[in-house]
Image 1: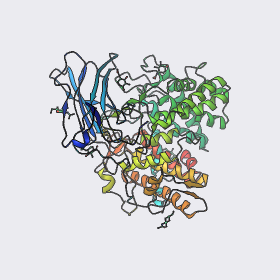
Image 2: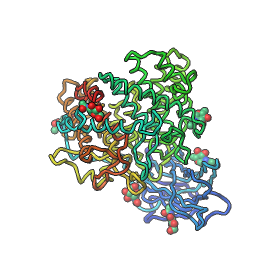
Image 3: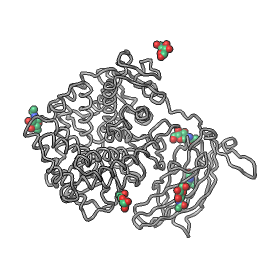
Image 4: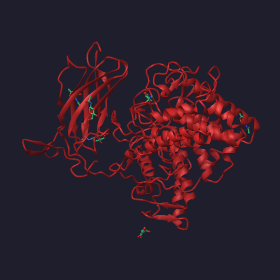
Length: 633
Ligand SMILES: *[C@@H]1O[C@H](CO)[C@@H](O)[C@H](O)[C@H]1NC(C)=O
Ligand SMILES: *[C@@H]1O[C@H](CO)[C@@H](O)[C@H](O)[C@H]1NC(C)=O
Ligand SMILES: *[C@@H]1O[C@H](CO)[C@@H](O)[C@H](O)[C@H]1NC(C)=O
Ligand SMILES: *[C@@H]1O[C@H](CO)[C@@H](O)[C@H](O)[C@H]1NC(C)=O
Ligand SMILES: *[C@@H]1O[C@H](CO)[C@@H](O)[C@H](O)[C@H]1NC(C)=O
Ligand SMILES: *[C@@H]1O[C@H](CO)[C@@H](O)[C@H](O)[C@H]1NC(C)=O
């Protein structure tokens, strides 16, 4: 439990008197802990500076293998050490000429948790299976400027007040081959089952160097095939239906083949496969335990759609579900059991950067378990159904740990600050809701914590991407939504590391969340604004005099708020449109300064995200035939 009192003061008892560093410090001081490369250890904290509330640390790390995880733990202002009170360090430079030692470091603002002392620095050398520790027990001295003490999230003033759906976006995503939706469909299918690849595989992008994305990622493939399933379930064209169905059965069989690969290093959490569907064995961030969950979700949805189209339960059992009796082709039971057994193990996130407990991963795992329990029961498997519902209940009980009441934010992970990612803001939270909401009221699109988090995450990019403020209108004067990236501290530029950029799929995700929220509010016929969600509404409905109350369907404000969600949804899609070249092709990113496309060409996920946002928009517009029309193209 973290207490508000005394949060930002670093006080310690020295010789019986209370010493508060923030009251006396003036300039940043770099404290040396270990003056030279140690001769009797493999890890040592070299130095730190805790200045104006920001901590910077540097450590000596012995270079014994490739896969290293270095974590510095401390106690917060309340004197306790939670999973959040830690830094994951990153490589900085070699420490000696023969590179037998390296310097690793991290920095970030510790506000609002504070720090009192370092506990230990732990070095996991994954390839050699060793863990090295330096116990510290070292009191941390605050220096420099006073530590900021406002616990409130930053307040931004909206630069636009868009309302309702706009014709330019309706035309841009219209159900024809030449619209952006039509192009996205064509380009997405162009990356499924490419010539020479194993059947049922999805290439992340046909980019073979700089960056090399020529692999089948379990997560990306499942999200793509989920869009294929939407088309399968809705098409009225017989030939199209058969085509989609064949792809989905091939995809299921490819999944079972992946599960049986003898080279798996981390079980079903293996994140990526070669195009011949053999395991990728090089160094990588593994496991990524969201993959089995998203694959199971896609295949459960496909099973229901297949049955609704007249398919037999026996075929579902033999080709999709029953891994016990049909292990070579049917992956579902194994995926669901893996999720039930492993959801609480830390794993790498969807960006493949850090092993921890991730909100995105938990959300998709939860949805797989909730759906899986119903599906197993439907298949007559009551024991498995109970295993899955028990796991879902246990997992659900952990979700509240991601809500940080001081930051008023759903944290993307309940774990250490990764290399300066101290904002804890990540669009992965929005994606977790879009991909992981189980339809049962738990973290739904209209949840007030979800809304305020989406507001904080989206607006954080106003401070880091020049294009977000240099271009706020298109040539016709229509507002552009905020250019959204993965997280504000991102340094991945699409090829290597320098400065992060906005991503098409992240910007589309904001549009999709707003459309889906508008659908859910409209269905529930009321909007309750809470103190938690008020900052979201004050930004996205800046011209509505919104207060903490419930607006009912008979209140004029109810319609104004819905129109604001629709208007901003379109503004976010207009941002995507604005940075889409005339051929309609979508890369991974667009440049933070120029807005020009950047990173992997034709990223499959960029197209899938544009399509799911378009489906949500047209559903919100009550254009219910739209997904069928896209599916029939
Ligand atoms: C402290 O100073 C040393 C020597 O200038 C430098 O190498 C190190 O990076 C500094 N440490 C921090 C945490 O800034
Ligand atoms: C602390 O870091 C924040 C951003 O992370 C920066 O805005 C602020 O100026 C830093 N404060 C000091 C005293 O360096
Ligand atoms: C290091 O400190 C963390 C946080 O207090 C603790 O969970 C962990 O067990 C410690 N590691 C070792 C090896 O002492
Ligand atoms: C999954 O759970 C099993 C059993 O607890 C464990 O041995 C295995 O390491 C876990 N795998 C992953 C990838 O978390
Ligand atoms: C805004 O709403 C509050 C109550 O919800 C009301 O007291 C106030 O007069 C309104 N202000 C305007 C400018 O309409
Ligand atoms: C759209 O393009 C696909 C693929 O090129 C083609 O098969 C289909 O006939 C086109 N549909 C229409 C309506 O033109």
